[in-house]
Each structure stands twice: as C-alpha cells, then as structure tokens.
Length: 419
Image 1: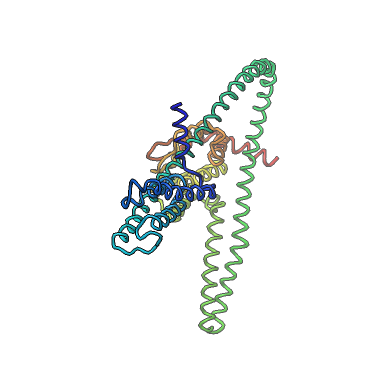
Image 2: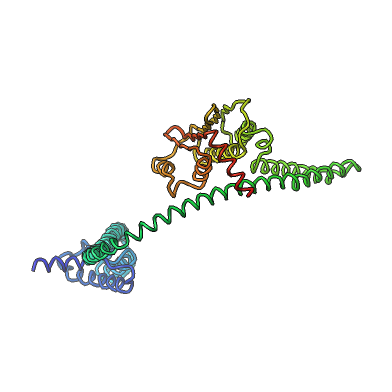
C-alpha cells in the first residue's frame, strides 16, 4: 500500500516532456482554476490575508511539472481570478490602495522566483529521467548481450572442436605452402632488387633529360630575354614584366637543376661517393635548416658503381627521414673505410623512434616501411647489413659493407644485366 502511494506521488510530481504541449497547458489551466476554487473554499478561514497562497502553490506545481510557460499562464490566470473575486473592492481589476499595489508587485516577484526555481528543478528531473531510461536500456542490452555471448560461446566450443580436427588435416598442406612461399619471397626479393636497379637507371635518365631539355630550354629563354633588353630600352611597365619573366626563368632553372641533381647527382659518377655525399649534405642543410656535421675523408678511393649508388640512396633516405620525422636540430654523417669493409653512419639528436616501431624495423616486418625495406635489401644485395638504433635522444642508421663482397656482387649484377 505504501509503495503504491509513493509511486502515485512520484507520478503526480513527474515533469511532463516538452512534446506534450497541449497536456502541459491543460494542466496549467486546471491548476489555476483549482487555485481560485481552493481560495474560495478557504476564504472563511483566510479572510483578507494571504490572497495568493493557493496560486503560489499552483504556480510552484506547474513550474515543476509543466515548465515556465504553462506556469506563467497559471500565475496570470490565478492572479486575475483572486484579484477580481477576493481583493477589495471586489469585482474590479483596478488597484486603488498602495497595499494592493504592493501585493500585486509581491505576487509577481514571488511567482517569478517560483517559476525560475521550478523550471530549474524540472530540467534536472528531465535529465535524470532521461539518464534512467538510458541506463535501463543499456542494462537490457547488456543482459541480452550476455545471453547472446553464452550462446555464442557454446557454439564456439563446438566449432573449435570441429576446427581442430580440420587444422590437423591442413597442417601438412600448410607446410608445403610454406616452402612454396619461401621460394616465392626469394623471387620477389630478386624482383625488388631488379626494380630498384631499374628505378635508379630511370632516375639517371630523367635527370639527364631534365638537364639536357628543360634546362637548355630555360637557358635559351634567359638569352632571349637578354636580347630583348638589348634591342631598345623598353617602357617602364614592359621592363617590370621582363624582370618578372627573368626571375621566373631563374627560379625554374634552379628548380630543374636541383631536381635533376637530387634524382641522380652527376658528381656520383664523375667524382665518387665522397664528393656527392658532401654536396648533398650541404644542400640538405641549407634547405632544411638542420645543422649537419659531415665526416667524410677527402682522399677516399673510388668504389664500385653499385656500392656508391647504394650508399648515396641510403644517405638520401636517412636524411629525408630525419627532416620528416625526427624533429632534430642537428645530424651527422660519417663514412669510414678500411681494408675489409666500409661503414656509413647517419645520426641525429631528434625524438627517436618508439619501441614498437623500432621493433618492426629491426625484425623487417610488414610495417617496416618502404624506405627502410629498400635500404635493407640494397645492403643485403652487397653482402652487408643495416642496423637502426634509437633512444629518446636520437636515431642512428649504421651500414656495414664488406668491400670484397660488394665488388663480387657488383660484378655479377653487371654480367647478369648485360646478358
């Protein structure tokens, strides 16, 4: 009995949603009328005091249940009824005494406070009700999910048993596929090396074409501009256009030369890895703003063509990664050679590589990246090894190439290509 009574009270005081507009204003109107009737019933007891007490009760209820707009309607309706029928002189809506005016002002002030407080409490209650509905739905969904999970677990147990039997049968086929895959990966590795070699040849060809065609065309354009200036003194507005055209030709020519040299620097074929590496590091330092310390001997003997090309591509890729990812302010390049091997080291003082990423690089996983994988394959082709070390204070790429192995690999590759 007590529980039913509490549920009834809770339902009576539960706020109506904003969608029930007609119901809210109907309740507000009935509350105003009931406030007037209740004041009429209590008139023998209250007399000429507390005129608006029943209206205040109705306003508070409507503000809590219906909202501020219906509560305002209740206040106006109750005020008109009380003032007309119970405030002297009765049956008049014009206040004649200061006390009546004060009562009117007090009524509207108190009603405003009640409406504001009731609206705030109503909003809190609506949010609480919405939260309760959401939590109830989540509980139902969770219970249903648990039932589904138990059913799925039972099905999974049965399927696991069936699958285990199938796996035993497929194990022999898998071993055969593994051997086929190993052979395929070896073929892919050879193809990858061949593609990188073709890519280098294509870069050399594109660099030569850029230098011989676009570069010569831009140089001829600059000569034509110079001839235009020598014909006669142009007008000022034409002179500005000629200067702009000359500046654009200079910028385009510089861009073509830089692109051509980055694709394949002529110094690599003409002077060797030492001069090409120094030229590249100096240009990279100017373009990137990173201070680079270059420790490359000036009297380094020429190496095989493949060995020098691999070292230069590793230098390019490593410094590009320094600029893109390390956030370093300084880096260094060190090249050393002895009777048996050649060592190249590129390092920086950047933020380093996180452990998971570094583990992928060390294990040569699928996520090692195209650049790192390409460098490792190039070095492996020459019989060397590539190591990547990283801490929170920087990253170092260390390449070791055995000179005799590099020479043999280079010679065999040259023979196979010619064939």
